Image 1 (cartoon, one colour):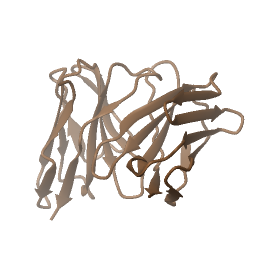
Image 2: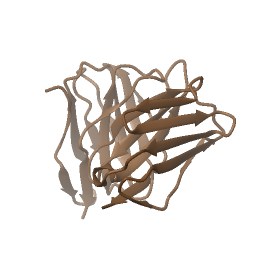
Image 3: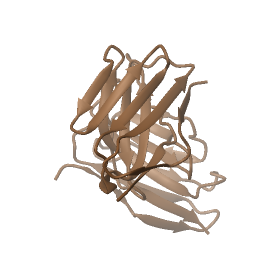
Length: 113
Length: 114
């Protein structure tokens, strides 16, 4: 069955450093991959979408990569700030017809001043 | 303001009772979804609806029911048949169901069974 793996342990980094979160998937060949941010007790918020033919996508301090050979996406936050502290979810999806988003459990990021 | 709302934010239920969670959107989206989130787990799909008067079971539909009589509304009923209903429930909507359609989530309802 399709499986999404994100680091279950929290990632703790110092303010100003680059945070890198990993999303690995198996038994799946997604055409797209979406990243969401979720704050405690709230619904996820969409951040970025990357297509399988795009190696990299950027939005302000965020960068996402998509390696279909490794079956992996990396999510980077540069110059991290305490306000970036949250849980980040990856969600690969296919193409054609109904495309169910399969969410990973997420990685909690804590940025310390 | 366009958005998606859920009510109530917190809900307590006695064992054996049915309870209905509300979800409303004014984004003019065709597709709507219900997810369940448990601690340390990803979002699991309960039901989804691509269009009014149509809905499909997700991965964990047992013990739940939905209706989609209006485009704006997609209520979820948690029945007494759901063995472990205590969880955080999230409603979402999207323009369509293609791979590039991103989902907009409501603030969630935390259901506790006493």
